[in-house]
Image (tube, rainbow, N blue to C red; front, side):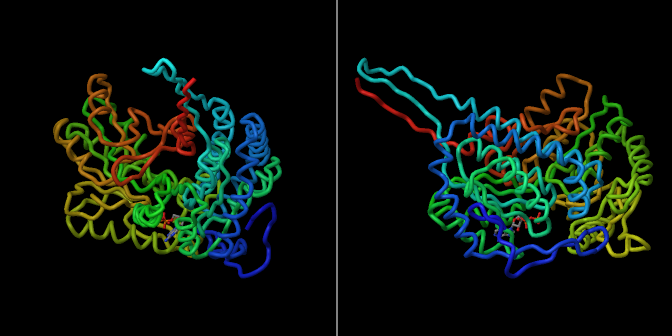
Length: 473
Ligand code: ADP
């Protein structure tokens, strides 16, 4: 834990393990409500000097942190693979993505322009300025254990806010490594504080009820996000919520089915399906269906499952045993209700995989609305394919979800692409593109996928308040 410029290394601890091997990889100090309070106090004390520093001075520190991340890219990625399980190549990509937020917001923080507005009164002048919101509390998930931190820390610090962060209990080591970098980069004490805990509830409670916290930013499940938003509501705290998703992936009949199947298989199994923008329903127009399934299943059968530290492994473990149970239950339910299994469909518990949390990459077709997988987020390596006949039908089905984060469309027809872009009720639409994310682009969802956006100008605005001055002269 890092509070008010000091590492807290004593007290109760909780243990962290490698999800691929079950091996114990570290012990971390276990914090509670008292530590959350101390961290909020430290962030409150630091707010006046940090918010009055220039954006240039703040940027300097963020850029130092960017350089340190680049220097330690390999080490950070290896730690991430050990703690979270993703293949090393994916971990390297994540470290780069994470670092990009530091650089991008260091630059953007210098461009928090205000406005002057003409008035109807001759003696009046209006001036608008944007200023940091104050102390921010952040709660982050385990699936992207470094980039989800920088996506919050970078804009908050660039905006002149101070921050208290609670990382997921499964991945505190990545958070500690990230804080070591921020400290080395020159961050003054109290500006960013880290509270690690095995039980998130008392920390979340303090974040939501302490009047010094002006903003809560959360990435995680929709259920927990709703709970926190409710807890923060009595004080009308600002909230940003990046929650679950149930992304449709639509392949129209003018697309190349082989190219689309490659895209779908790369995207679906990224991070073993543990991503909120992972496609959960893959809709394929009937003419292409057989070719699509053939290509997809051939690719799935070739995927190597195992410890992400081993070369050639593209599917790592799931985060824990409960995640494997959830995936298995969804697949069993679908098969019981008539889905067709083309690949996978089983837990992997043999040999070297015995101690980890593995489930085979799985391809199902014939998925129908009665099946749980049709509505529930899977967060695992299961691709569910559904045939469709026409545009209106597929858009209606795609939009038939409470979620609204990401959607994907494959088509070569410009008009169809534009219609789909406009008609789909999702915050992020990839058109023939499986990676529509970047530090420079707004990430976030509609409906129950969340509130607010991260990355881009919108991501900075989440940490700013608008102040209007009316001057009578
Ligand atoms: P997932 O299902 O992906 O693990 P969660 O929403 O449970 O997602 O976890 C995301 C983050 O939310 C983690 O940091 C976790 O510790 C935290 N969290 C979970 N429950 C609560 C809670 N009741 N109060 C505050 N934080 C919570």
